Image (cartoon, rainbow, N blue to C red; front, side, top):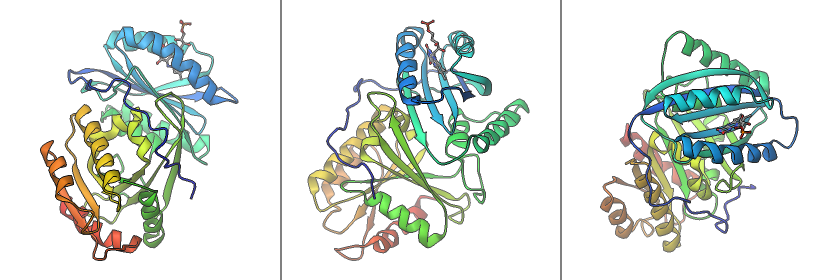
Length: 334
Ligand SMILES: Cc1cc2nc3c(=O)[nH]c(=O)nc-3n(C[C@H](O)[C@H](O)[C@H](O)COP(=O)(O)O)c2cc1C
């Protein structure tokens, strides 16, 4: 498997120490058809340069995603400034047919003046377009949902069998302290549960966004609402996009390793990210008896987060052993 899980180029938060503001802001999400034929990454970088010059001074923060021939942009900030930006962006020849699919005032999520990503998936533009029109219909009929739910419905849609497709199902992040075992686990699980695994590669459209993979698996039969498991690369934790969605995670599962320093490091990073977005997910330590140390538990609990132990029955677990240990912990989160 070619998961980019090296730790060498992990970037730090550029503005570490700061936090996501909590006062209500204007929020808008639109989708548009991209007219850039090639080198979308270069074009995204040009857009980023404009956005960084304009958005910061205007108090605007945006997330821009390119996927399946579409742009999706999520804006937050003063309502007048958002409207002015929308009008400016609407004149841009790099896209057409802007559809506003969300507008509301509420709690901000975005952390930086600009977050960008390119998702590589085999999905065709017309399939993506169907979801845009679904969201447009929903919005125009007056049904308002959270901007994050709209974004997820467009960019990470749930499998049709999910009992609550609009994102109300629990989302669980899986991270490996070392190696790519989180990805191996959901790949294996997708096979045994006969559910599709959605693989997404985020190309680095910003300096803070290295090329990372994030795969997800929906388990519609789990609990009342179904469950989504998302395997993230460690580097992905430093991505603004992950940051924006962190408040949606019920739990973060850390697949521990024999290397205690690696365990400590990943837990440190998860806790730092949670502090910045004011979120208190349950942290599930998944590993062997020897790996589940009281140090880790104390580290998590000191920050006011719940620590949950998912202990494997053997000291040399395989993927099936990991799942057998994790499942009761996930059931307990219900
Ligand atoms: C999909 C898309 C998203 C964009 N997002 C932003 C943005 O968030 N902020 C911004 O200033 N410009 C953004 N732009 C660029 C603007 O459309 C426009 O080119 C730029 O702001 C013009 O800047 P100027 O008036 O300094 O020439 C975006 C362009 C596209 C195609």
